[in-house]
Amino acid sequence: MFVNAGGEGSTEANCTMSFMADSFFQGGDAFQTGEHIVESALPVKREHLVCKNCAAEIEVTSAQHKVMQMKSTAKYEKKIQELSAQCQRKSDECYQAWMSLTAANEQLEKVRMELDNKLFQTYSLDQTVDKQAENLRNISSKYECDKKFWAVAINNLQEKIKVMKEEHSQLLREAHECADSIPDLNKMVFAVQSLVSQCEDLKVKYNEEHAKRRKLYNLVQEAKGANYSGCTSRNIRVFCRCRPLSKTEVASGHATVVDFDAAKDGELGILTGGSTKKNFKFDRVYTPKDDQVDVFADASPLVISVLDGYNVCIFAYGQTGTGKTFTMEGIEQNRGVNYRTLEELFRVSKERSETFSYDISVSVLEVYNEQIRDLLGASPTSKKQWRLAKTDVQGDRLKEAQNINRSLSALGDVISALATKSSHIPYRNSKLTHLLQDSLGGDSKTLMFVQISPSEHDLSETLSSLNFATRARGVELCPAKKQIDTSELQKLKMMVKELEKKLKEQEQSESTTYQRVFVITLFICFIKIYCLFVPYIIHG
Ligand SMILES: Nc1ncnc2c1ncn2[C@@H]1O[C@H](COP(=O)(O)OP(=O)(O)OP(=O)(O)O)[C@@H](O)[C@H]1O
Image (cartoon, rainbow, N blue to C red; front, side, top):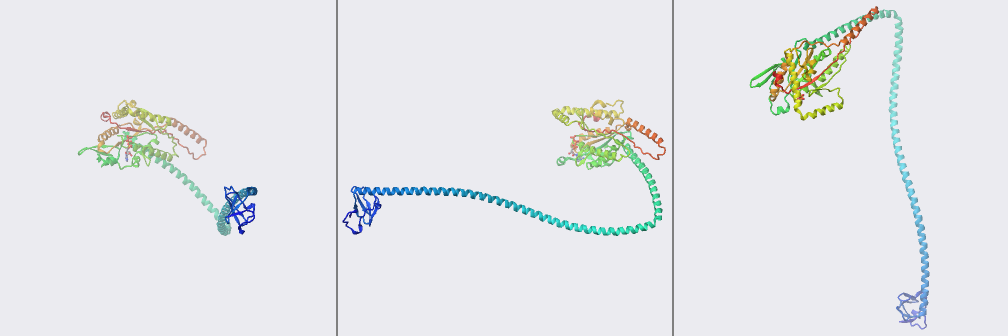
């Protein structure tokens, strides 16, 4: 259906056309005119518009159409401008809102941080408050305790004051009574004075008696030492000590060849095969059950001899592994002769300190490869060098063995010469015998420990050691002599003279004490001799 837009004589009353520019659109767009909604029928060549409601075709002129288009364009441009302005405003508002939001956020963050700080402070304060509350509780409980304690103390003091007051009044009463009995008191004073003088007399007598006893005791001790070896014609004492079978030897089933039946009498039997037994006699024979205390009990009189001024030498001799070190040094829990000797020396010298003054010095020497080494005097560096030197020669065992043999051979020669009372004793043939000259020679006391193994596997070495020891035991020397320092003796004589002079000068003096000073320089030398059996020592 065609409608003449805006024209007269429209065919449909309800599709009246009025040109309302607002309602028209160019090609393709829908627009409304009165009751008609028209669509352009583009491509429109004949300028027709279509109503959308009734689909009526409305014909417009191109001028009208242009005007309509321009109006429409202007209207939309205006609207676009308005919308753009509106959009700009909204953007500005948005920006403003965003800015204030950011500021608000910053503010919020600050507030949060402050809040955190406050919370932390509150927490710290809570803790401090808790601690202080705890302290306060402690203080108050301590205070309560103290309060109770002091209350009790005050009560006690009050009780004491009460008792003391009673005692005071009692004493006052007694004082009055005493004042009444002064004559009796005087008598008592005289009696007491006479008792005191009696007591003084007794004290003097007691001191004299005590001094006598001490002197006698010293004489007994001295006699003990002298009996031990000094007054006999034989100076080398020999103690034989046998070690126990080691665990390895027991495990390997080694039999023991030593018979200790007569050990108490100083006798020892060695089973040399079958029923044959060779007997040896020594000054002491120790079984493997005898301990360090037993051994030292027998050796200790020698220590007293040292303090009495004798030269003394104790040495251990035996096959390797037979207990020389064990006897002389011992182990930490069970000390040997060396340590016990020093202990005894200091004990006895302390015991005699009122009578004698001793000056004790100790030397420990080692003889190795014909060189003498002072083990106490050596500096750590030189000790180290010495050890290194010893390990250096480890490859040269032959030299070591030769030197040991030389020492033993020389010792054997010296003992032989002493035994045959030869006019020349070859002490200077080795460092060992040279060193022991004073100890083996004439006026000294010598103790030799011969150490043996009980094992059948060591039989030949055991026999060699025992033969050597028997030979040493047979050596006769002249009686031991005291070594008194003559310069000290002179000093003592001078002191006695001076004292005598003073005594004469002080005629009224009733008693004088003087101290005897007896200085002995003690030389102890413990030497360990390794036994590398040299036939001509034993049999030569
Ligand atoms: N009487 C004893 N009782 C218990 N154990 C002993 C006894 N004698 C020696 N022994 C033990 O036998 C081992 C060897 O002893 P020791 O080292 O004293 O021998 P040694 O003769 O000094 O040896 P070496 O000549 O090789 O130095 C050690 O383990 C020691 O503890």
